[in-house]
Structure formats: structure tokens, C-alpha cells
Length: 150
Length: 153
Image 1: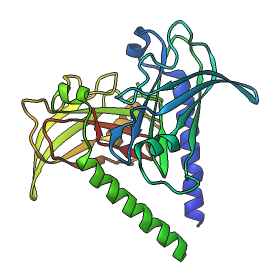
Image 2: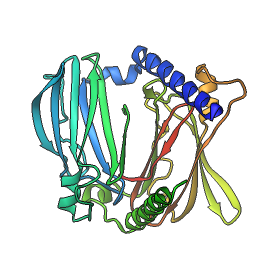
Image 3: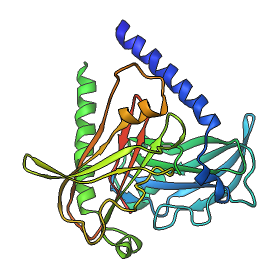
């Protein structure tokens, strides 16, 4: 168990270093294009892009959040007009909420009652309003993952 | 290991098998079909928070115990093969493939703080059952974790 604990601590340390490194770097290529916050919802249960999934975008301020927009993904699982664009992207913390259970209900996929995953909230910060942020969600009824894409 | 964990794991394995079966039968969007068959790759480095620039990606065709390297590329600043898809409508064939991402070499090259001699590769083995479909292989890596997918589009 000691070894396991040590490894975990090491991994946490590694991730912390990674986060620091992330704050200081961005490719030249991504900075030439206009800033945006975009997403891509991929259903890893059926192996399809999550067409029609409802996505809410909130601005987070302290303990409260303000709904900015509610959209549905297009046939490719993307938000056609992006979540934020050059004209409305601002530094701050945001919450992107993916309505996973509602999506599977619409798709006719059997789920538990109540569903294991209902909505999946992802909180991300725009720390530089001139950069491009892509935040995909891979999900199934039992799990999800996200990352900063490009 | 409790009986409950066992049951839950069995259930998850069954779910994964089901998902794989569904994946094989999944219809594609009209947009994806229009784009034609291909294999594309994209490596995101979750250690630096950027696309993995300069990481080696090999694509091998498997035939029984034989493996043939079809492509060996080094990613561009956007984390993608610099000369476009690994397989195009002209070169894509049904069959079994391996994508190999040289994670350890990459982290050594960028000077990540990993133990000396530490090395790892990400190997994804997958089938192309319909060469008319686009296959996208996104990889997310840190020195300690690897994630790989075969996605439509």
C-alpha cells in the first residue's frame, strides 16, 4: 500500500507540474486564428457524434452562475456557432453543462432509474481572451472525459 | 475484492462489449460519408496543455503475426500528421491496424520531469471494417496516462 500511496502522490505532483506548464504555453498556430470556446460531444456508447445533445453555458461568478446560452449540438456533435466567439469571449470561469441522460433518453438507450449520469458539468477558465479553447466531452452512460483540445 | 465489485466490473465489461458491437453497426452522418474513407490522428498533450508537437506516430498493418509499417510521421504544432491523413480514400483498406504513439520519446525530448530511463508507448490496435468511413484517432497523453479512441469523422 505504501508503494501505491507513493505513486499516487507522485502522479499528483506530476499533474501539478503539468498544470503549471500549461499556463505558460500555447502554440503559435492556435494564436493566429480568432479566439473561441468550442466543444464536441462524442457518444462513446454508440460510437457516434452526439447529435442534438443539449448544452448549457454558464458564466461562473463566485458561488453563483448565470446562464449565457442553451444550444443543441449539430449532426457532428459540435455547436455550429461555437459557445463563445471573438465578439463575446471574455476572461473568466465558465461552466459547460452536457445533458447526457436526456440525450440517451431521446436516443432510446436504456438507462437506470434514476440515471447514473444526469448532467455532466465541466468548469473551465478562459484565462486569455485572445486564445482558442476547445473542450470536447467523450461520454457513455457510465463515464466521461474531457481535455483541452485544439 | 468483494462480490459487489466483481458484479459491477462484469457489468462494465458487458457494457464495453455491447458498445463495441454497437460501434461496428453504427451508421455515419451524411457529412462523414461525403468526406470519404480515411484515418486521421491527433495527439493532445495534457501535461503541457497543448497539442503534442513533434511526436512520432506509426501506423502498421497487421496480417496474422506479421506487421508492416505503412506510415511513420512526426506531428506538427497542431499535434497532427503534417501531410494529412495517415490513410486516404486511395490507400485505406479493410483490415487490422496498429497505431503506435511514441509517448516516452516525446516527453524525454520536451524535457518533462520523468524518471531517467522511463519510457512508454501508446499502442492502439483496431479494425477498419468499412473503408468508406472516416476514422479519427485522438490520443490524450501525460507521462502517466494514455487515452485512445477510434471515432467517426
